Image (cartoon, rainbow, N blue to C red; front, side, top):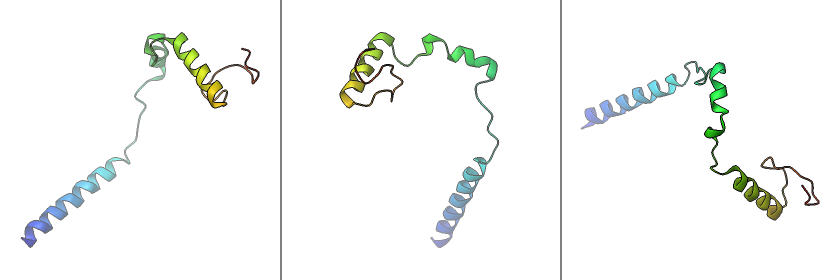
Length: 80
């Protein structure tokens, strides 16, 4: 029983060591600079309706009193 526990503990520590040391590997960017224009395509946008999203964010900012936190335009007077 003790040997099995010892073997399991050693195996777990070795596995944890491998996982920790693999985090030190060099990380290359997944998206190459010449591929970034594909990500800027409007079809890749997270929101389905940009007009509706803009209105929702405007209402949220007016309600919260935190203008500009989500990139909304306009001043504090409420006139855009």
